[in-house]
Amino acid sequence: MTGTTLSDAIEEYLVSIEAGNYRANAESALTAWANWLDREREVTAIENVAVIDCRRYARHLKRQVRADELKSSTAHTYYAYVRAFLGFCEADELISRNPAAASRAQAELPEDTADADRQFWSARDRNAILAFMDRRVEEALDGEADVSRERAYRDRALVRLLALSGVRGAEVFRDPADDKRSGIAWEDVDIEGGAVRVFGKSREYEFAQLPKKAADALERYHRVCDPPTPLFPVFPTDHAPSKYRAARESLGEEFSEGTVERILDENDIDDVIREYEIVLPAISTRGARNLMKRLCESAGLDIDGEYLKPHGARRGLGHQLYSEGHAELAQSALRHASIATTHESYSNIRASETAERVDDVLDER
Image 1 (cartoon, helix red, strand yellow):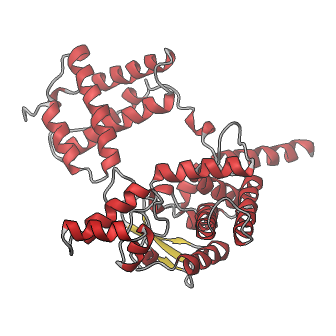
Image 2 (spheres, helix red, strand yellow):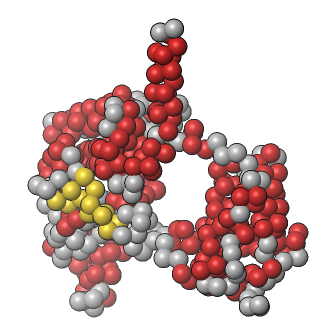
């Protein structure tokens, strides 16, 4: 018997998590679970958590879904946090086995119907937004756009990168809740080699493929923006307070506070950033979503009342590659660990193809 309380075990688990956003979400879900265990099952020690407790918790989540208090996907996410935590406790020898992993416990979870609602960019929508971005650059060059030339080139490069490379938004934009996800810098981009270095889902650095159209857009944008240092983010924030904050922090390492304020008062902030090679923060994942929403509104694109979300670009690319018979290419483009993951991600396409083959066989009789 370890005598370890749930709260102490949860605290130890949270310390082991590197991703800030995941850690915050896990803490909230696990705290609520521990409170439920104490209230409903009178369990407060990690060693006393049994399969039946996890089964009852799964049933509790199912009731919340039926009462429209939770989405089925959210219920599965909450249970996944518990299962991961108890897996950690098993590895740390606080318990002999993971009770949440038992099939009879998970059998009580509600049916997860979230996958059918996950957006992906269709080839038509992808082509429409890409064509709009090209027109926007042309208008900026002619002085007819409502944005600067640099901003038009930046936005086009951003959309092409999302649409054609298969990267995740969290891999190229900044996640304020995760210190290691600061967004890609120009030193991460190999235009000639057709690759971009990203901090992947595995929390290891990986190289994502960079097709020619995406590479060309980045190369032209690089020439226009002429970043002051390779450490500069590819997609820097355009938020004025963030620019001034970064400038004050950077200049403060070399100058007195009075000198810093005089520099900022006497010069344009963008000139200061360039002259002193100040590295700005990258646009955030939320900022990228807001940008895509504005771009879709300007382009007149309405996808079932929604806009083209960054992660939908990745799914759309994989969907097209897989549906056209390039499963291994889809695996490589999306950086799936195995072909089985790719098959699972696009099982709806496989089912559709199977149905067509069945129809062909039946029609022959």
